[in-house]
Length: 398
Image (cartoon, rainbow, N blue to C red; front, side, top):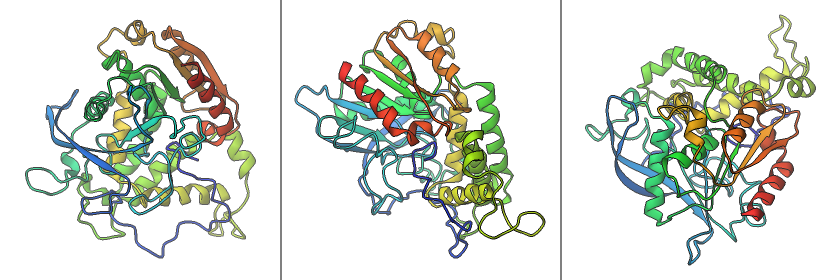
């Protein structure tokens, strides 16, 4: 699986991207498309954290729920998605949903986040492309996609929108807020932005503040995407299928996917093997690892939007729970709720030391729980048995 939990290991003897059908300029969900399991709530104008626009008007949030909220309203769990995830946490691929649930191994009947026991909610973030207001949504002034006009949104803007969804659902306090990567970052922000409304957090493979190294990796991804002439500065929505910024977003995805895996896993899995019978040494063929990355570049283009990739990557760059609050440790000093902090020992994108800093800053931490894996950042999804055991023990303790 990759950073957003979409299954990736179905790749095996793939011959490379299928060029038989042109890819739409954007694979965003649009008004009029099948809603799938999505529900929608209009939360009105969203006051922005840093963008000069000041307010994002007429925000609509797309969300999904599973299970039943009990009479005491104390069994609600919020699952926050990562960079290219969405509200479809669990369930099959079906009308309205290009892929199956991105955390099927964690969420559902009989799993640690048991939908027969808990009321589970996930919303697509502001700036997203799967039903929530984002760059592909209609601008209120002219009905055309926001495109390049869409503002810079931070994780704090996303949390404020999630708070509005929480209010709409009538939930005073989440029993648990959890999520991987960007989802874990928002769980951390929630503890400061809405004290008392989160009973416990479980950030997985995440960090309290995005580091220079992490910003550097995303900067190269954004540079590749924006350099694609078909990106057109962000205004490409009327382009014909096959004429969108798929090359640039694909390169961005390949860079990102490399950081989600470890050097050792790539060496063991692919080594210097060739793809099928092709010879990459001056004969026009490809190494197997090249085919693997190209495969995932195309998969993303078939379910995502380039502008959303830019805006959400920038949001991750903005993340620092200590910004304007005296630093990470000062910001988290008053947070005393239980915290499960999970790290993967081979993660080169969000290394263990990021989790150790978070553990030291949170008085309610249960300590850093290590998932042992050769895979890298994606280990917390590939090694679901280990992660599930940690999550189950934590939930049992609450």
